[in-house]
Amino acid sequence: MSHMSQKWYQEAVFYELYIRAYYDGNGDGNGDFRGAISKLDYVKSLGVDCIWILPMYPSPLRDDGYDIADYRAIHPDYGNLADFQEFLDAAHDRGLRVITDLVMNHTSDQHAWFQAARQDVNSPYHDYYVWSETGQEYADARIIFLDYEKSNWTYDEKAGKYFWHRFFNSQPDLNYDNPAVQEEMIKIMHFWLDLGVDGFRADAVPYLFEREGTNCENLPETHAFLKKVRRMMDEEYPDKVLIAEANQWPEDVIAYFGDSDEFHMCFHFPVMPRLYMALKQGDKKPIVDILDRTPSIPPEAQWLTFLRNHDELTLEMVTPEEREWMWSQYAPDPRMRSNLGIRRRLTPLVENDKRRWLLLNALLLSLPGTPIIYYGDELGMGDNIWLPDRHGCRTPMQWSAGKNAGFSAADETYFPANADETYGYETVNVEAQENDQDSYLWATRFLLQARSKYQVLRRGQMEMMAINNPAVLAYWRFNPNDEPSDDRLLCIYNLSNQQQSISLELDEYSGRRLTDLLTQSEHLLLGEWPTVKILAPYASHWLRID
Ligand code: GLC
Image (cartoon, rainbow, N blue to C red; front, side, top):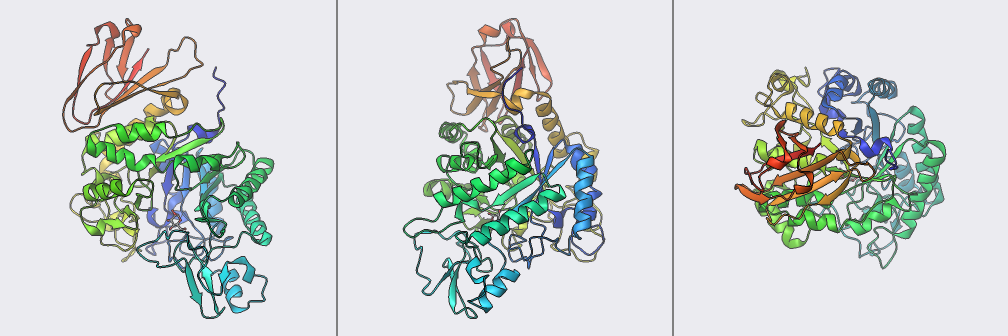
């Protein structure tokens, strides 16, 4: 038996589900909780363990719900608290956990706190936000929504002052120097944890505090508050998970795990663009380098890995030259770009090439970390670059070739279902793929099933295999504590569009049986394994050595 810690979130697969896009239960053109309940069997059938839902709170939706107007209720388009509770219970009944997005850094300008704050500078709520007479402070803080904002300060006529915001100017930042704000946020967490949510994806956590002369990211004060939050979780909700959205370099993200006293999980942002980079360059170097640069994490922690999510494919954690290169390769049309990223979905990024799609997913599911699948990517859904902001990747889930992709009976939906020739709902939908063994949906289920069967893929250690061919990435996943080590998996990827030959020295396994989990073939005895092996273009292999 291994002495590794086994927390549920360390071995899970997450599914990112956007309620507005998933299924419209009442025919008003918006997805809702009652609709999503009716699709939970589908979610379960994928083989995922935990659903992450995007912000579901009342909101003017200037940032699609990341601008919260009330932290203790449900957006009326999505239902009400009773519907939410029913969704949660129905998910739990199926063995699915649910985590919600918690936006800590800022509120909507429509939140009652901000309305009170701007109307009366003597109100206790005034100090819930960050104000300035001049709008000159914290000049070293970068602007994140570069396409939309010129400054992190916006003048408010009513208050007669500038307020601080790291995102849209409709999202004033909360003032964490005010103990009352810290208390409020912790009380809000209690509210949802008591309803039964399994944890939070804490949004935009690097920016909670501001200090002159710094870039206002990752400040010690921010970490101190987050440790307080974790202490509360450990004491009162020990089996729940706290996840950091900290889009930072590995050496800065690592601080968010603390000494097992801050976040349980952090997104691994820098590895994501490098998977695409390596695939396009036909060279493993970007992946190998970033993994080398990734420090080890505490025993009860875990990385969250992903290929795509609801935002643009962010290119913040690459060099400026790499960013230009990624844009030129993956976003030739300027409409495909957004801020410092690329607003496209996974399958169009790999040009609907099943081999590349499989390679990226196989990588995602075999690298260390807990993977997240973004709704619709299991079908190969496309994007609509003609929609504003990041909405092109948030179109209705494609259930069938029927009206509105089978998503809604309404005449008009919040945004139209994608209807383009290659990725539109008439071609790409759940119903069609359920009956097609060659579909993306079957491939997704197949990969997830393989991963769930092999503990080494979920928690095993990883060791690079030295292979003298830059196009071929190969690594072992194994369980160091098993004696004898009977469960060893060799993952091999040909990142190039050409055949590649490699020589593998597997003499020490001679006589043992070898199975390729991805093709269910090659039941070879290892003595027979050719020393030189030819890999097809974009080939993926998970070789199990018995
Ligand atoms: C996070 C979210 C993004 C949102 C931003 C501001 O980065 O993923 O969608 O716009 O925070 O809340």
